[in-house]
Length: 194
Image (cartoon, rainbow, N blue to C red; front, top):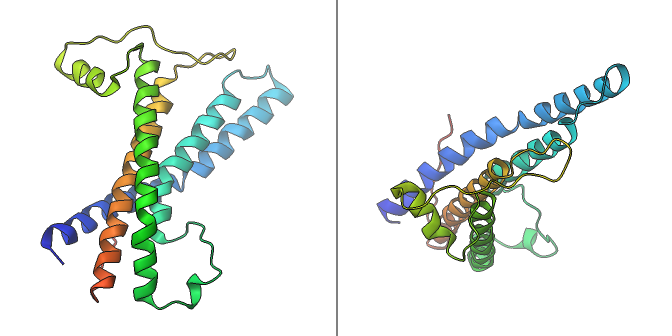
């Protein structure tokens, strides 16, 4: 196993592990928002922001916790034959199927970047160059997209979180591929968690 692959696995797993542990508390954030929604509807004027904010919290919880779920192996598998295979055969199968996940995540990132650029007022067909232009000063932020609800929050923060979550999931999927390659070769990449 190359030093690059081992180092990559250690860094990405450590980052996604810490983010995942923080995201576990997101459930309590959602519960707090929904509790406030119930209280305000019962005793006060209903808050406009609670339903959509709970949705944003759920998206953040789900998307940012995805890489942690993949790392812990708690994703859903069709376990009809898989559980009877030895570790090497599982690693071969996982290494093969991870390519489909990588393609899927690439499509999600491509669409997410385009959607985020749209939410920042860009209507062209080159969203990556638009973001590069924002960094270099060649582009400007246009008319910001807002939700069509009564609260009307801006859409770019949640879209940015989604793109970040997809990117972290892509990095974690590559880490899992490296671990599978190590298992196929008869090695194991150990990850220390603190």
